[in-house]
Amino acid sequence: MLAVEPVEQCRILLPMITDVVELRTVRAHTVEASRQVGRTAPIELGVMIETPASALIADVLAREADFFSIGTNDLTQYTLAMDRGHPQLAARLDGLHPAVLTLIARTAEAAHAHGRGVAVCGGLAADPAAAPILIGLSVRELSCAPAAIPGVK
Image (cartoon, rainbow, N blue to C red):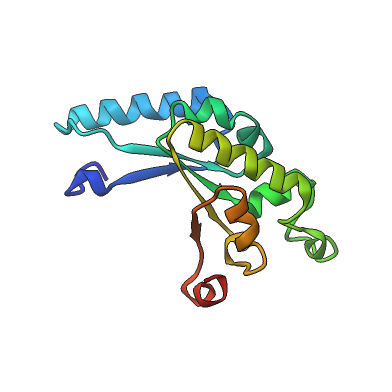
């Protein structure tokens, strides 16, 4: 991946990060691998905010991550302690639950405070009813399937 040209177009999004040490470890490995192939331009490293732990330490992560993407499917599942694959629980998973929205707001605030970009992906990003709420929480980038774009616009 480090051989991508131009390297400036390459960004790495790290899933399931729950501690800044994990981000630092990946960054150190990336810097070393870049050095080995003669790359001097840094590779941007982002954190997928998809656990309550990562959302709760978003301010710490934002000091070192280059960007955030909030994965609402996993964040909702883990925040509400429900298996989204369970037939009796899946209908109760609500990305607009106040606890989930609080974690999204906290993450967006941390990202903006440190000049980092923040996007939302997952089911909530494709929900037309959620778009104005996410905008109110200072989210300016939504990632959804092409078929969902007209409804979200």
